[in-house]
Length: 133
Image 1: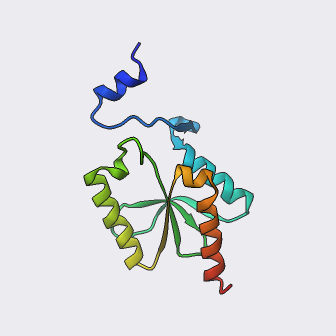
Image 2 (image 1 turned 90 degrees about the vertical axis):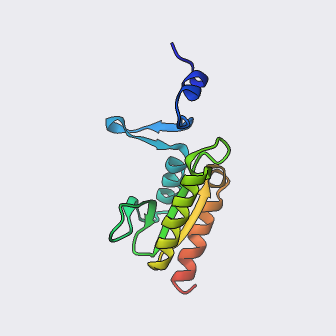
């Protein structure tokens, strides 16, 4: 039996440590699951894995419905994950800049920031601001 550390060393890409099982074999990160719970608790309507660009196949982790708000959960920030390595970081810069150019507000947060309640606070503040509050 292969241990987690052995599997991690033998693969070219990092192994996701924190995932929550979903139906049909899909997995969702702990950060995604927790943010989904926060949004549901506050009755903020959202769409998961929203394709926001008319030409590219980019997906945002969350879109706040009826608002120009995208939310990205940045995982692997302390484990050399895709979002923090050179090529992945560069591609993320292109994706987030394209979203901004197309009129989207992009809120980015780590799993730790979601756990602290910061990301949901940012979402609430931006919704309030966009509604003129």
